[in-house]
Length: 332
Ligand SMILES: CN(C)c1ccc(C(=O)NN)cc1
Image 1 (cartoon, rainbow, N blue to C red):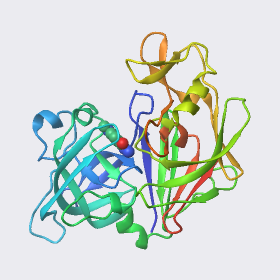
Image 2: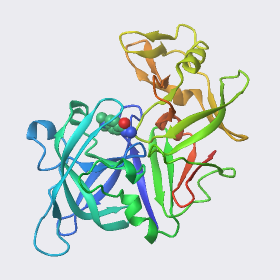
Image 3: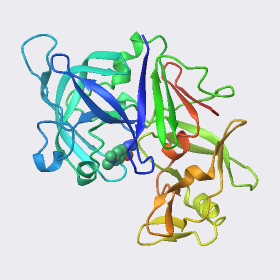
Image 4: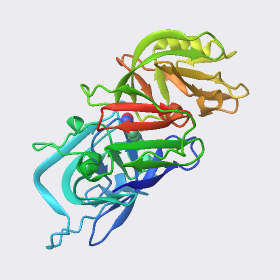
């Protein structure tokens, strides 16, 4: 078994997120556009349990709890509640239902129906749920923790692996169970993943800011398709934006902005001896005013690891190798 699904950048807002059409339900299937998120492990959707004012503009999951084996089943007493690093949150109840992504189906997937969502989810009307693809140890369902869709399907796949091939301003692909050798240029460079924090966490071997020299220093990072930007230590971020005239940390935003007339420098990361290049044009996140643009590289703050979000991931072919607990990067 293998699967392949399109990854659509959220319409007209600078690749803020990538949405995947997910089919939920057997008796009355619904296609719900969801944010595939390697930074979390809950599969949750807007639903008929979400208050109307919070669900306006969203497709809502309507579980068909009919009496056949193929119907949705409420999991009695199960609840979930999650808070993301941007302080957004959601919570609710749990059903079991058929979930198909790119032709690959899980018959009894925990589908977490939202009863409450915070405002940033309500306003993001293109996104009707999150599809957690980090490790199941982070799943918030209680009292019985539930498995991610990938954990449920991996034994049925040709290989316990999936890949992300996101694109700048265009549809990309998530493939499940195989590696498409035509989708990348060079060899794939792998490095071990630590699952201790439940994320796709790994060590990168250093970085290069624009045309400066490569800085060799082991650093921790997570690969997070659910985070838009590239988050690095504040000292690195300061050095990076120092290369762009008039770029500065805007106190009111808590973020670096730069003149939209400038093209930011490239960012290069190391994995062993591999060098992954993120073109400066990928590190422009969009205007905050007529002349100031929001930087694609920002500080990781007090986080103990950097966050390789979409602005970096879309420049690479990325292999999430669950079977061997490793992550792979290749130029494309
Ligand atoms: C508000 N929305 C759409 C979010 C989507 C994803 C995340 C996140 O931290 N994923 N790792 C937060 C918020």
